[in-house]
Image (cartoon, rainbow, N blue to C red; front, side):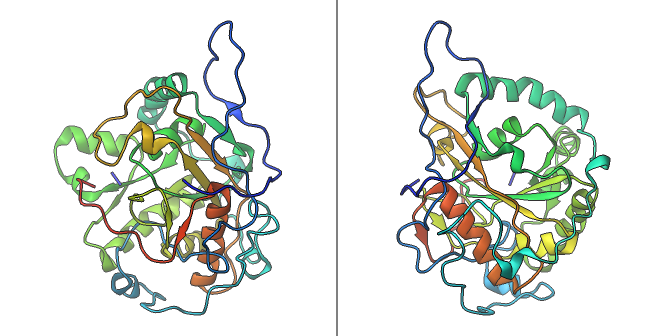
Length: 323
């Protein structure tokens, strides 16, 4: 299947501790990711460009309807991260979004996914006790959760801390391979995506849109791959294109600590003492106006401000370690 430099304080609500504290001991304040604030140092005037980890090159992105292999317009200076990076979106992209996922008709959680949360999710919450900030910023209806990508464990912990079903992307080979693996990924409500890229990934969009329109959540990592060094790399515009197609907002989030729980070269998570796994969710970002590049710049700027990661103005090198 499919940090950094601190910012200034934000209005992020206090952390929600998932899992019981150690008996008889006081729980110290945990300092995970820095609060949202001014744009991360090293960012040239604001944000990056982004997409959801689908095609891996500008040439493939250009094969999409409306796609482009070149910049559509220069990135907006400032990106909106200086004043309130986790607050309302900039005027250029916050208007024109209608959430077609009604809050009262949220899709039910698949039984296998519910079982996974009750077992593996409970183990993650108890063993690492992740700190979660801004969980109430996830809207009741459909939305795309877009964040930085440090580890395979990002998806495991995200599913453990968000009490709703999240549709993740899974390689299409899993659905066509061993019957047990096929039933597993299908039972978890995963969305198949072709690794070939180009126009083949449009089928993944077709499968994701009904989930979003029905009020579900879809997770996307705009960098397209795990960061090799903890920095935030240039994103790709697929997340914005999918959000516009489904008519839903994007909720930026930042994660830290998962790269220590499961480094890039590790096959399974490892229990490491004093590792602080932290999630920060920002306010929903509307992407109804502006070019896909401009809207993606704002989303990536929100992620950078939430994480405090150093920004790199190029695509992350693709990892070839089985993912």
